Every structure is written in structure tokens, then in C-alpha cells.
Length: 304
Image 1 (tube, one colour):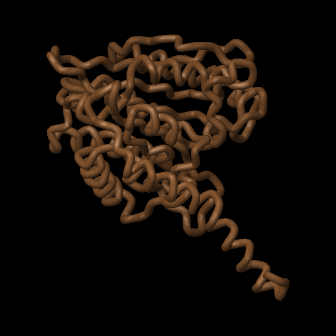
Image 2 (image 1 turned 90 degrees about the vertical axis):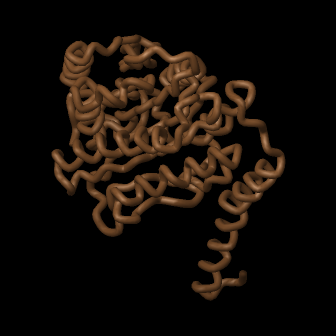
């Protein structure tokens, strides 16, 4: 479901203008195109740090996720979103890989780097999009990160659903309880379907790096599914973000400091949890793949 970059540029600028959202150029792509973020600022004054929420889409151009961010920006500019906008600072980067759209690439930028799986936030030469997005993250320090993607030709065993990484990757018992509660809210939308395992916490992904640095709770990816139809994709994207924000409200976690890790917030680093995370990475990256290869050799009748 490929959408022309120039059309998306005008569409998102128009939606932001209607909603009163601030347009911010956060950097430039490898080929010099603007990387644009739209800020839906909180409509209430608060003495505490207002939780920032970051939503991205458009990392993989042929996927249907930009219809989700389109619907979300429409919603955020509506009366229905007025209550949620009282206490959250929401940032939307709807086209995170402009060069990929223009060049017709499946999932890479102009240097043929897949920014989702290989997020190189220090590589200005090959990944200026990642560098710019990371600069934005350092500025806003989001408590939630949602990255929409979309299944296109995949059908068998694929459902619109979130990536859920183990809650051990979050610091603090309170934050882990919050993550579990938000997970349940999203699982109820996806009929219990979710992606788990190493794909959800591979160290090279932005989702892993942002949690490691800030303790950000991530749903990256949240897969929409083209077979469900465009209108279902639109409604689901709005429902996902709404349920997350309402979950934060109902848990009373409307102070960013209670989620962010020290020194960005008040959550202390937990060395015991760090050891468990190291074990999970060892299992997912080394031990389990080795066991899988050994099993395949045995099934083929080769020496283990």
C-alpha cells in the first residue's frame, strides 16, 4: 500500500495546521529532505513534568501504517481528544524515512540501511534520520514510544498486534506493573495476539536503546494489517494510542519522573534486573539460535 511522499507531505502539514499542532523540522535525510515532527502540546499547565509520548510511522514505505498516523493526527485535532491532550505532550513523526518513500525502497533509507532493525543514532554519514530522531528523543524524553508498521502480503498466522518485550527490560517495580497493565489493554484489542521474543528486544533497535537510556515503555512495532482494510487500520491506530494514554491516567502515572530512569527521572537503576536482562539477551541472541541449529542438524541426520 504505497503512498506518494509528496502527497503525504501536504496531507500531514494540513492535518497539523487544522489541529493547531506545531510543525518542527528535526533534521534532514541523506538526500536532504526534511524530517518533520508534529507536536500536539498539552492544553493544561502543570507543575510536574508532563509525560511526553512519541509516535512514529513510515519507516518501511510499502506498509499501511501512515493511514494510522493520519487517523491519529485527525483524532488529536478533534474534540474527542481534548481530555487526553490536557496532560500529555504528544509528538508524531509520520514519515520517518522520506528517502525510502521517494526511492521506492521496501524498508531502507537512501544508504540502504534498515532503520528499524539497525538504528544507528551516531552515524551521520549513513543514518542522519536516526541521528535526528535520537536528538528529538533526547530533547523530549518520552515515557511511551509507539512505532506503527503494517503487514502487507503476510497473511498466515499474522494479526494486527503489538510487539511486547519482557517487562524485565524496564526499571522499577511500579513501571513494570504499568507495562503489564498497558500490555493487557493492547492485548484486548488484538484478541491476545502479540509478537514476543528476541524480535522485541534486539539491542540494535531504537525500541531497545530508548528503554535502556530512559526507561521508555515501547510498542515498536505495533503492526496494523492491510487485509483488515484501511478503515480498520485507522480505527485501530487511534484505539491503540487512546488505550495507552487512558492506561497512564488510570494508573495515576501522569508525572514523567515516575517512569523515567535516573538521571532523567526518579526511577533508580536496578543491578539485579540488569543481570536478568543480560541473561535474556544471551538466551535470545546466542543460546536459543544455537539450540535451533543443533536441532535442525539432528533432524537432517547430521552430527550434532
